[in-house]
Image (cartoon, rainbow, N blue to C red; front, top):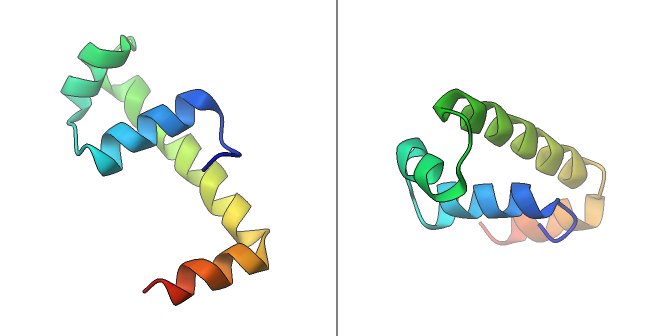
Length: 66
């Protein structure tokens, strides 16, 4: 996740580690509305997924964690 931008790391951390709702994230990060957060989350997840796919070593590490 360190290769993601700061805003993506922060957003994904709030969604997946702190389990905040989009409404709570909206109040905390001051995005325009919840739809903007949904779009940003989608783009960040796509970027993270692409990074994992492009790095076979990282994919092997993640698979071994299951």
